[in-house]
Image (cartoon, rainbow, N blue to C red; front, side):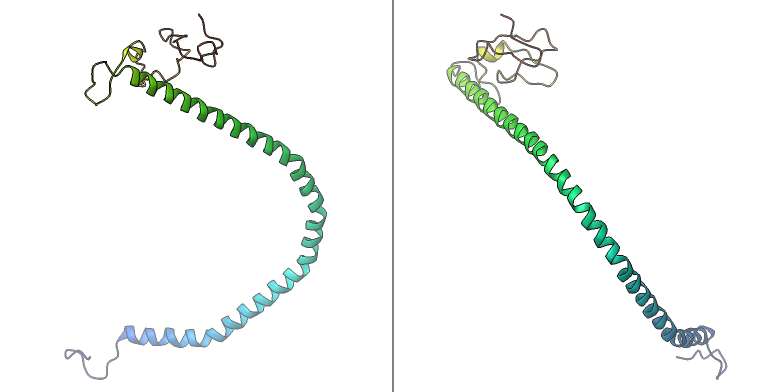
Length: 169
C-alpha cells in the first residue's frame, strides 16, 4: 500500500535493503552448502583414521576394566549386603518397638484421654520430652541426655540402649 503523502515511484528503503539481503543469501547458499559438505567429508575421513586406534585402545583397556570390576564387585556386594542387613534389622526393631508401644497404649487405655484422641498412660508419663518434641516410649533414650532413663522395663532392657554402650542398671 502506497503512502499518499510520498511522490509516486519512490521506493521504500527497507524493502530495497530486504531485497538486497535476499539476493545475497541466494548467492551464498550454494557456497555454504558446499563448504558444509566438504567439512562433513573431512570429519568422516578423520573418524575413519581415528577409529582403528580407538578400537585398539578399547581392546587393550578391556582386560584392565574387567579386572577392576571383578575386584571391586565383591566389595560392592559386601557393602550392599551389610546395608540391607542393617536396614532389615532397623525395620524389625521399629516394628517391635511399635508393637510394644501399641501394647502399652492398649494396656493404658484406662488413662485420661488426650485432646488428640489418644491416651497417655503411665508408661509415657515417665519419658521426658526432648527438644525434638518426641515423647513416645518407642523412641530410644538419647545418650547425650542424662535425664533419659537407661533402663525402662522393656524386654530388651539388658541390651545396650544406644551407641554409648550397655544399659546402666
